[in-house]
Length: 152
Image (cartoon, rainbow, N blue to C red):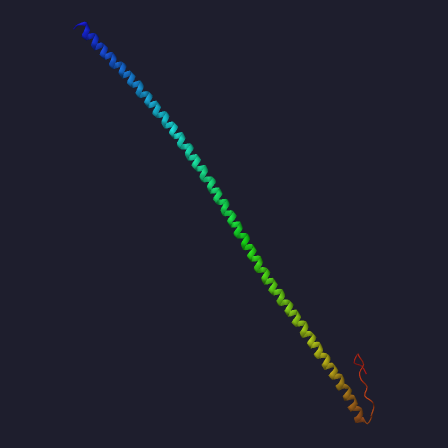
């Protein structure tokens, strides 16, 4: 073989080897870039997930706060309604007690008036009985009226 075909073949092999090395370096840089992109995507995904989790936590706290506020409003309204009803019942009971007291006082006054009338009637009957008794014995004395304390 002559020098030219051996030199051309050697050059072709050298070019193929250089191209192979360049291709290996290029592919290794592509792999390194792909790995770098994967790491960046994973970091972005984790930060995005953290952000979403924080937003969900904020929303959950906001919803809890709103629910607690609504519960407090309901509790306050319920307490106010209960107090109003209790006040109504107490007022009604106090009115009933006042009415019963007034009725009792009126009934007591009526009983006292009736007893006074009965006492007066008894006093008159007592005087009439004494007069009748004296007349029966033959004494004709003037009837004496009882004093304010009921004695003669």
